[in-house]
Length: 199
Image 1 (cartoon, rainbow, N blue to C red):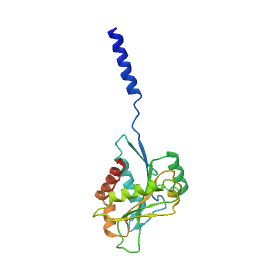
Image 2: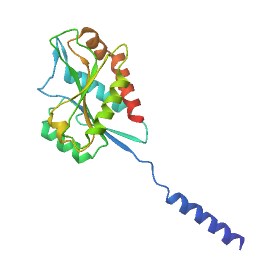
Image 3: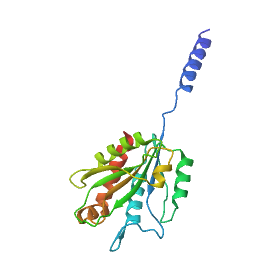
Image 4: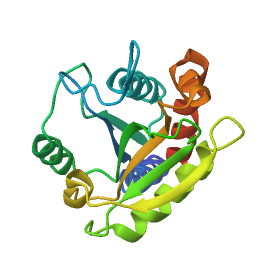
């Protein structure tokens, strides 16, 4: 009888663990903007497409937890059309899309980190909240805090998830460019983005 009771107890414990739900894993798509023949903003030998891909790769390298899955939209220097980007994003059904870019201005004094969201996105309110939180996380004495703006951009409009285009400083500002193109600056940006994603 004792053996039967023990077996029954073990079976009950097994059933309890069997019905414990696995932790929900967040899927985050990181879109390194431009690629291929589309260099984006350039300054001398530095191109936007290379810098955003470097930072995207560093974010991916920090993906060592079980609660987040980072998916890079492009993992090499390849061109993707806007339509191809949207189709891939929506096939992944992510919790968030972050499209990485670097800004440009005729005024070389313009600097700082900002973001764009789309009112046409079905998850507009969440997109605004996420964008504000990420800009706050990235801005400091190295990257000034800029505003969140609305933009009519194809990828943001058509992504079936909260989505933002993140401008990680200005290529045309010497301080921003030096920071974003440095190994230390890129590591710091990637670490701050990952820390934001873990919240």
